Length: 182
View (cartoon, helix red, strand yellow):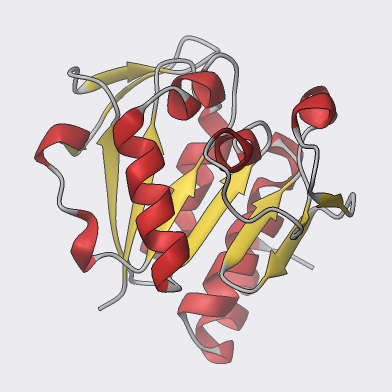
């Protein structure tokens, strides 16, 4: 069974994170939320408290197939400032595993010197931080093993793009039908 880790930092964007948990579970993938600090309770940028499944210090990412980095402010900055997050993202990217970042979270790539010269999309607020990347403006885009999404309103486009890579056509069709996605 494929496994996805959703990294949660204090100040994450609620919809961007939990929509990914939802689509993974609908597609019968194993998914774990990981707090990137020492607290199981992680509070979103809009005050929604979520209990993470595990802490980053206790997580061995070797068994995963994809990392998901939600945006939100200051969540994406907290991800970018985490040494453990940087190491996990580099490990996944360099080994060909999927790295999925939405909204402000593509900045984590830039902060760690990962995937320069790749086609990406992101929230307009980080444009000045993304030098060296080719911005597309798409709701979600896949470039090799890198998946990026523009923002909260594109959360399901982003999740479906990831599910297209991790599952089969029938599973994605069933997901879209269940979401009433067109």
